[in-house]
Image (tube, rainbow, N blue to C red; front, side, top):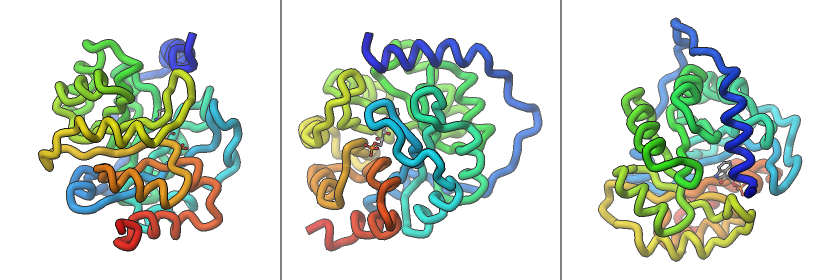
Length: 257
Ligand SMILES: O=P(O)(O)OC[C@@H](O)[C@@H](O)c1c[nH]c2ccccc12
């Protein structure tokens, strides 16, 4: 059984304990749209990641609000918050705290397999959810995508190979993430982005976000040079002494050359 299968199995059990979202929804500060930012200029989706199955503990006692504010002040395009508890030591509370503190888009980074998770993400202030093609049956993917869109959320559809990319295009997804990390083996290669970007329609309607394993600003420059409009960065920002300057430098005009 792969780690992804294992995570999904845990998740399906976990969500049985979730209760319906409260009737009265909390009002969060208004958020911008990630698609609009990335259609205009390159951007960093900066992640709050306490730990991961591949790296173990990264920054378990991070002050999530302070970290999110640093990301926002540096011009991040959005903030991704890992909410999975069992494997990433995150929580829906982390997401809620961040959503209360910023006005850039907030991504609920989790393994979504059910509508109840979409409701819960929205109730905690997320404006974007992640759907991982490799984790879902085709019917589930279509159903959850339509459900999230009708709830007014943006959807980042994550792919890892050509077949999955074709599924994302069939959905007409606007935000498509190419995960450089194989969730089955943990292997990371930025060539994934370079290769799959060739099959990405440059129609201006959709944007490509290169995810995972971007350790340096040069790595970001590499994937931007191969057609990515955005990068999703977790570990490097969590470990950076100054995450703000990492973001600024990675998206500066200079880095484009
Ligand atoms: O820490 P990194 O290597 O910069 O990766 C960030 C992000 O891409 C990664 O956390 C991620 C990408 N897709 C996911 C799906 C589920 C959980 C986590 C992820």
